[in-house]
Image 1: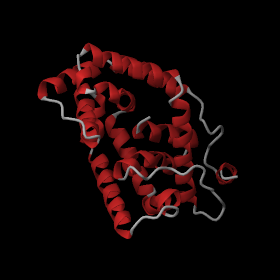
Image 2: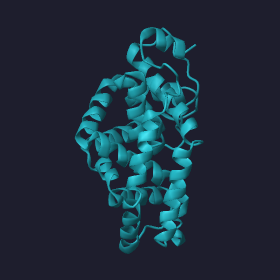
Image 3: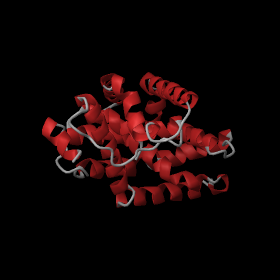
Length: 248
């Protein structure tokens, strides 16, 4: 599941904007440094500040949702659908089938934006980032930098990349593009570059965009199933007692 849908589900399930913002962090961490991943579980105790505890609940929600999502038909059938559209567009020679997983997740983010509205989503993202401003670095320390040997330079580079990612997400065009096949194709091209795969030429890029436009109806329908699914944390509403129970 991609970061926009993670944010939406975590906030809906917990009632906490801070938890929603926290649920995005594992995806953003991997973009900033592929070695930074959530260490599960991290104790959520009474000594933590309220916002940081909520951020950690959001990260825990992310891990639990991914565990459910990747084993459920809402992911497995969607991934197969994207792979089929890639074959129909004759893009297999470009090794696009390797990216059906992440492409489907982006398509679901697009469905969410079509349902919730781009501007409303961007406003919620911006508010969420501001809400956890002082907890960005603490959460990364608890999940990675406090338990792994990393240099001060590596940490500084990570923090700088996280700031750039946040700024680009809040700016808007990145996430707005998820609503359209062409926009998803642009993001997939970025993933290809990070993996060292050859870039798509203009013709193949256009074919991929059209193929992904053909996935939108199915993504919209499966999004509704995902939104009706129960929280993987049970009654995870973020109240003081609930936060402590989750850390038990």
